Image (tube, rainbow, N blue to C red):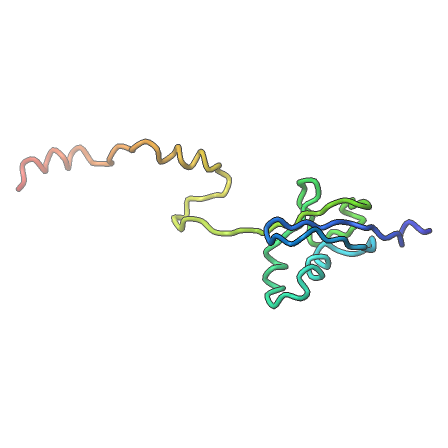
Length: 127
């Protein structure tokens, strides 16, 4: 059998959607984007799910333009489908790089008020 025509049997797990593990057989030139389209083909919101999700293999994010062959997917490996969740608090300060613990510690202590000492001194004399 020619190595270029060998198909790979893989497993897909999806903890975000709680869909049972699925088994697929893919050709080496099948892209990750094609895989997402196949996975969501019967959903009315397939294009949104395709653009807001990604596959991982052993914790490594697989690029949409990668193929089964170029990403190193082997027979009987399990890919995990994840959702890309965007958002924030709306204050513009989130870089998504901070841990939740770091965020909580940042606001745990009350910061001193930013009052101009000259204004504070002058306010004593005005009524």
